[in-house]
Length: 183
Length: 240
Image (cartoon, rainbow over all chains, first blue to last red; front, side):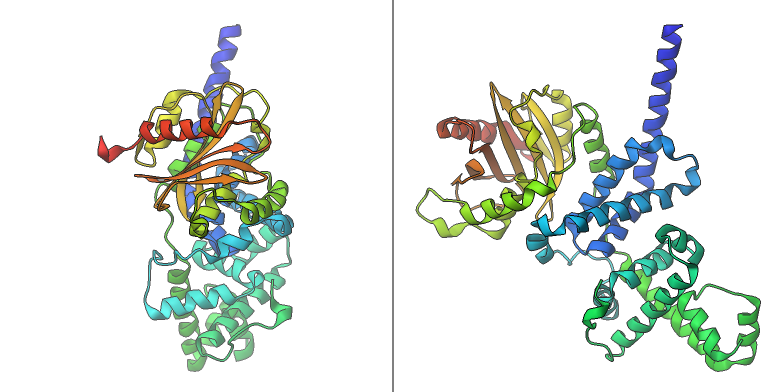
């Protein structure tokens, strides 16, 4: 009887391990890109991905719907990033890591894409973040609103402003953001 | 739906196709052009957002996970401690050799990363990890090494590179080891500050830092011995 329950325990653990590995393989790339557009630092992005999956392992049993895995992981990463901001004043990495030079490996290096990438970096994070979710991963307004715990119309307005601002940046009409727009 | 409402809709969700919007498009050439412009912009945004993911990221996540599972659960990083430590690291690193001005920003980052190490590793009992796990971790960095008594091992991003971060137990003492590829200090130098005592030295695979807590009673000669030992125990896999 005891052997049988041990075997069941091991089988559950193996099942959990397989599920976890599948999640890492399927979503680590997306989470890294999302983290990068949240924090703007490649090293910190990898840290955030690592921390997200460590937390995901601990709470994997709470993931009941495989179809919701990506949103679940994305939400964990958002929270990890928020924690990073909470300790920002104590985190030396903001002093050193912001100057990381390694932009050279980004995929598309055509001038218009580089200009757009720079424009994206100038967007306040509250505008940039929903745009990343919508454009890169195809989340709809309702899904983003649920993830951010915001009214749908607020998300729609932020996306509207994000695209307006990008168009202005690219047209050279908006060189920099006013202080009150900073995230 | 009028032009203003249509454009507001398209700027917030270019992929939405409510019947009112479709009806408006049938009758308004300017809004058809506008919608196409926004779709073109989104296509470019997607390319801009699609930055490269570091090679081996998923493997590193899984490797770190498997190593974490073999030892007592710990807090990932003691960020709160890091601030005070940072100031100590950045401003009080003392070079014992003559050319004290040669420290590079990347070397500072190596020392600063070491400051993130959970301090619970000092002064408490930890069981050594299995040698094959350590070898597997080192192999992921194209390194071959057989190192005993490793109580903590992880691949960590340091200055944009994937570095090996180990804690080695030596009797009652513990030493932090960082091997950072693509970093090459031009000579060995000593670190002696409020936080660390140790050496950073050039290695064929990158920079090798061996550090001990400054508050412990580590003989600097012992740290040098460990540095020399690791220099001969860690190889670039391609060299073998």
